[in-house]
Image 1 (cartoon, one colour):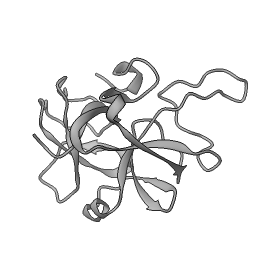
Image 2: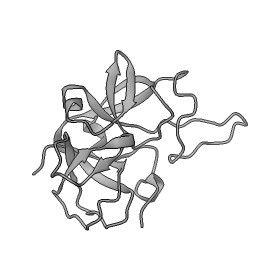
Image 3: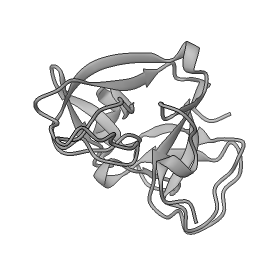
Image 4: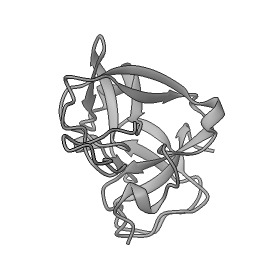
Amino acid sequence: MVSLISSLVVGDSVITQGRDKAKKVSGQLASALAPGNIVYQSAAGTWTASTGIASEGCYLQGVVEYMPRTSSTFGEVNIDASYSNYTAINVEIIVGPLDGTVECAVKCKDFGVTCFYGHPVIDSSAGKADGDVTTAKFEIGFVGEDGYTSGDTVVKIFLGGGV
């Protein structure tokens, strides 16, 4: 079962494909969130964990990017750790393009079933993706080539509409 971003990525980014095409913006998080969480811009320069409400589709949405940082004892903080000083620093948010050319590792709810490449993914509560597209939520992307195995809480998705 994949439950850590570090299990799916190598290096210093949650972007697994299309890093050179990614569009990023900078802002502060409204709460302690980790790289791979799905967020929406709730106010100018402030990013909040997605809640899974359809109206979030009216807001700019994105994925929290990993930024190398050190702990208070100057140890390296890994990619799975939340930003504990979220209001004191700006972080990068991956916002596009939304054309299926950028793949990111994101946190997700347990979809409950195995899903294959192209399966639509929606935003959900607590800044996580969900594969339950029967609800009236906002589609944020689709499952990447690696697919999704039931029980995983991290999945690679391409940003944008379904294929």
